[in-house]
Length: 172
Image (cartoon, rainbow, N blue to C red; front, side, top):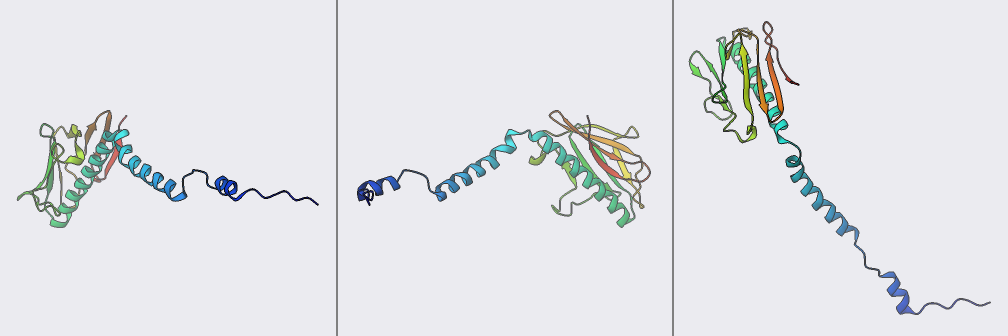
């Protein structure tokens, strides 16, 4: 019986060593591409929506803070909006409250805070005024709305008249 003759060693070794990438090299490339994508994608999609939504949620949290401070201290707490300065202030009868984290006056200025660049206070209406006060029970003086806009996005923060319930919605 005839057997096929084995290939010479030099031919067998060269056919096994083809130029290719190792698994480690491929994984390194995938990781680098993932990191690059994570850095680029937020800039590729519009950041105005994220900024506007973050500002609306911040405003909602600050209104809830003012409401709870009024209940805890049993004194009225007022949130005053200044559309021309693109800011709002939280104060009681003694003056501007101190922010519990920054230990500075509780003033939020959308033009200064980097997170909210491009966000504007486009509309404020609390019984035709620009301020809302919460009494010792947490009830607002008036119900009303504040619209925050950035790019083509507008979010509305609403304060219910009787209950003081605060909510955020995207306006069409």
